[in-house]
Amino acid sequence: MWLILFLIPLVNIVVSIIIWMKIAEMRGKPSWLGILWIIPPIGLIVVGYLAFSDGEYNT
Image (cartoon, rainbow, N blue to C red; front, side, top):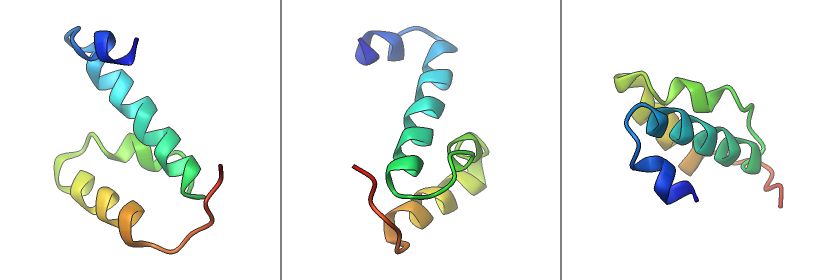
């Protein structure tokens, strides 16, 4: 289902924001970090922050 939504223009932006919000929540960070992903220079910082920061893992 998600893969099909990625193929639709403009919908793929919304879907990727939702996915990044879920990733942030699963890492124990605030979900609004997923919204910052769409800003180009800040997006790289957000990805690095989520990848390398210590946090609680919510499963």
